[in-house]
Amino acid sequence: MSPNDVKKFENIPKESIYKVPDGYFDRLPGIIQSRIAKPVANEKPFYVMALRYAVPVLVIVFSLIFVVQKNTTKSGDVETMLASISTEALTNYIIDSELTTEELLDEINLAQIDIDELGLETSPIFGLDDIELEDLSNEFETQYF
Picture 1 (tube, rainbow, N blue to C red):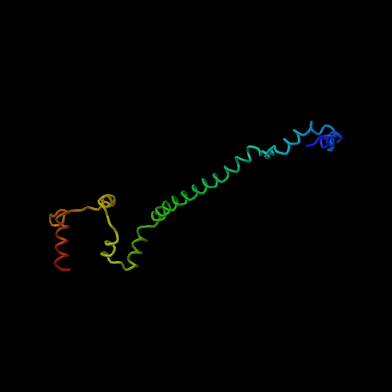
Picture 2: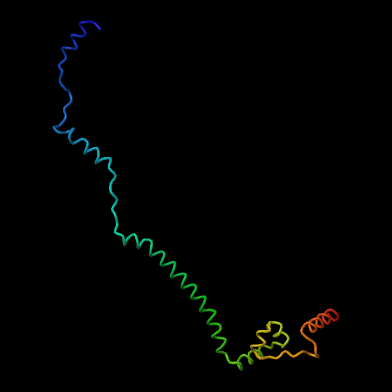
């Protein structure tokens, strides 16, 4: 740079070309913080949050109770209904349905406990016990069928 160029720069007035309102830089940090601060979410009361989660849980619990109770009453109702039917009505139904004794006995399986409850006596036939009768029955089926 030449000395003439330096004189030209010195002749330029030293004033600020930008105008700033009074107190702008004093308020600037507050303005910046208000723009970057996260807005506070609207906090809901506790009971609203509790209801949001409690209501679905209560609906599920009551539904399960209803289903379980319904299934329990079905089995209880069947037993009650069967107990309310008289022996005479059951006998008439079996006679009218034209079931033979063999078909009826094939359909029901009486365990020893059931026989004891009914008061039926299981006396050995021809002095044979249960195992001997079963063996005899198996031999009869294999020979004639």
